[in-house]
Length: 506
Ligand code: BES
Ligand code: MN
Ligand code: ZN
Image (cartoon, rainbow, N blue to C red; front, side, top):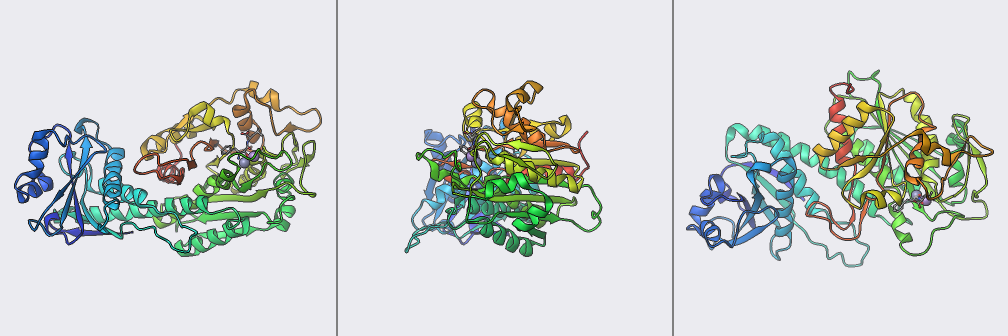
């Protein structure tokens, strides 16, 4: 899907379908919708008068131009109430329009006006960004492993702006929306890939290819380098796998920001989680191909940060490991030593995410970060606590970082909810023999998982996002969020990085 920007009148767009819009409660459409309505002899007004189309959000009406416009079809998208029309509503309207258009048999090319840039008074730039992003989010198609790839979709969307004065803003906004949308595609593609294809080595190869495309610095540590760095806790998870672990580091260092304390994103990259010797049950185990969703979000976020060339140093860290049972595998009862020298007793080899994060976050201290945020599909319990595909769990030892993340979540539409980290949650992970143990049992397991990670995060503001309830969807969630990989986290991290361009929050 290609996004273009064109100056002119949408009535003249040479495409299969044009998209206009309508707020709920409007009886006489104005602007571009009004012009199209007049060209169609008042057919849109008639839909409104009969009550067949109300402009309610997430509804559409399809009309046929029969020679009265250049395009053969018109789709009117409902914008909902003008009183609550923000960025999320713009993005959703674009997504609903693109999705409805893609369902039509002979529609490959569409043109749309910039929702919200007219009477709703949004900046053309910000509105165009959400239109481009919503269009891309809705148009995602996963790669299929079939001899015949039947997947069709829209090939292009032209964003039409009438006012010449706004054109540059619309172009800038669309470019930003495309940069973020493509990065979400990167994350979705990684999560959707089957685990026999997406091994740690393949993750590293793809991350490095992306890095050279967009101009990120990249480094990959192999197991020998991780051993030299002392990452004994991380490597314990990997010993049972025939696929060697890879520790990916991506850096965006824009000119003039070389020495700056970086913002660091760390993503759990378990390419497949069998549970190891503490083997998972059969039902739904295939979904553990998505256990690298944190790493995918970090890789996608760094891609967007580079494409946007944000004026801020940002580093992405993605420890990639496969968790398998084997004669060489680590076992419950083992005690392992990580980079900081701290020891961990293994209670469950299925609590492996916190183990790879322990060494990844210890390594992160080397960068002297202004803040570090880890994203991990860490516990089934976060879905029990917060449900699925609404909000991810947020834990932090720093109030300013927590507030910045909450705000970035609300603004990006990838929302979070704070969960507690009281000292009491530490008690269930006290070990008799080692400094800490990796599983607390059922009681308070969600907060204790964050307490475990906290042991390895000394010296910088840190937040942990448990995204296990957000990464893979059983069915389509909404026009922007398809079945399968959601790409959750990319937009959130980009929004956070943008906030940090103005310096750390206080
Ligand atoms: N990768 C899983 C968590 C998970 C569950 C992700 C469901 C996505 C969907 C994680 O490694 C895990 O196995 N967690 C255990 C922790 C327990 C052994 C302490 C869990 O949540 O049951
Ligand atoms: Mn596990
Ligand atoms: Zn896992």
